[in-house]
Length: 108
Image (cartoon, rainbow, N blue to C red):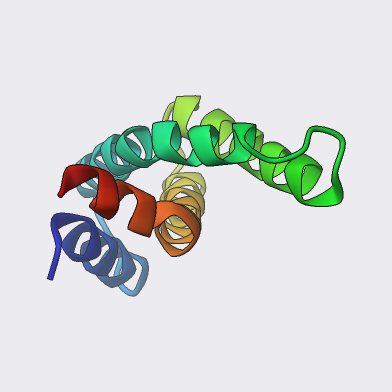
């Protein structure tokens, strides 16, 4: 299991329990780190697509959303913090599914 997969598993476990705010902050920080690692490879691949094409537009918009989520602070309200961690987890999963192979290929 990779570090990213372990972080995702931890964040799923936190969503199934009443996690403390420090646990949510820790999960959000770890997810943001993984997103920061994956974004450059994703952006490079999207930049290689034909600008103006449907795929380029939808992927560019999704990457912009991911970047915005990663830039947001964790809300102080418990439910909002859990939702934020869930959004970061979803973004991380999406990046791994679409661009994880590019990161793995670049590392080898």
